[in-house]
Length: 158
Image (cartoon, rainbow, N blue to C red; front, side, top):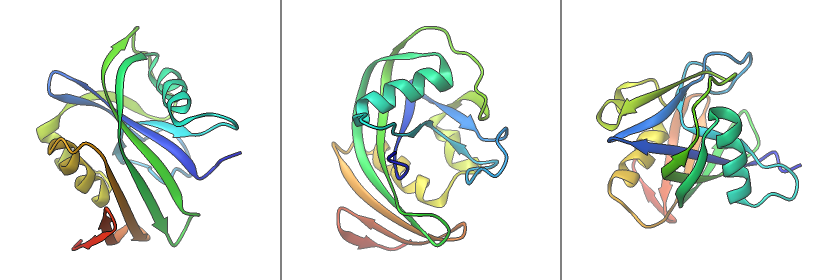
């Protein structure tokens, strides 16, 4: 099973992102943080198949319009390296249901950085806001502290 391959999606509506406040799972690396929806690949899945399955499982929504925005490489001193396919979605159908991993909430884009989010997430939110076609971002953490950020192979100050 591909445990180090994941998807993450920020569904957009009315200048807001659907965010998941991770408060329900025990021993969750994202405990109390606000993130998008997504999860780990199952054996044989493509990034798009994982994206669609995870969004449906966590929200009840079926994505109808989405795009791959970037690949994020997470390096930490506590977990194996994770490769995350980052998507945004602007079209969906269905009715949202509750999520067993946390609380789903539509958060205005201008309020996202004020929430408890990972420091590296602030970088990719800026890149999403700049409407970049595609980017590769490597984030290296020691514990919860962002030590290094490398955008498209070029080191950037943290």
